[in-house]
Amino acid sequence: MKNLVLILFAAILFVSCNQLTQKSSFTINGSTDQGIEGYVYLQQRLNGNLVNLDSVLVTDKTFQFNGEIPNPELYFIRIPETKSFIPFFAEAAVIDVFVNTQDINNSTITGSETQNAYEKYLNEMDLFDGKMRDTYSIYSKAIEFQDSAKAEIYKAQMDSLNEAK
Image (cartoon, rainbow, N blue to C red; front, side):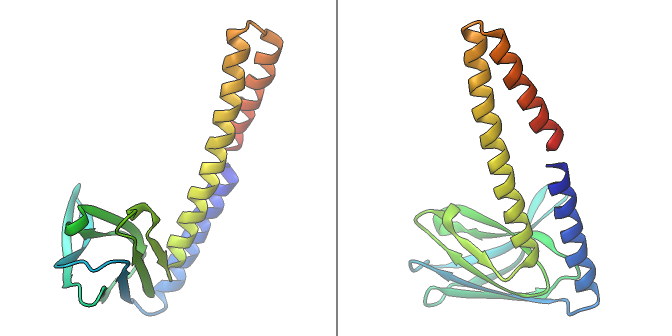
């Protein structure tokens, strides 16, 4: 897992450095599964607070933000009607955001290499967490049943997973 974190960091750094020599403008094309009435807001966390960078009126289930960004940064789209936020990595690119108003966690972001790298990292961490939970569950049962030999085996596996992280 340490290697995965290093690879992710290197990928983000590579993408960031490449973008320094390229364009710095972004376009965020948004669409929704249902009509949202009113405005959506592009926000960024500054000094611990979410700050509005821009706002647009949703028209015919679509919206668009345009701006300049020198490096990839974590932005949020706030949708007051659904009382939700969609976090994503903005960068100098055309980024498409599909807002799933029924299940905001199933909204999709495409067009951002940094977002892709981040999602890959999250998926790898989910796999790691699943392996760790499964191993810990077996370890706990071995302790409960006072099976010290089995407990030692699974403790060693957890230690190995932690080292690989």
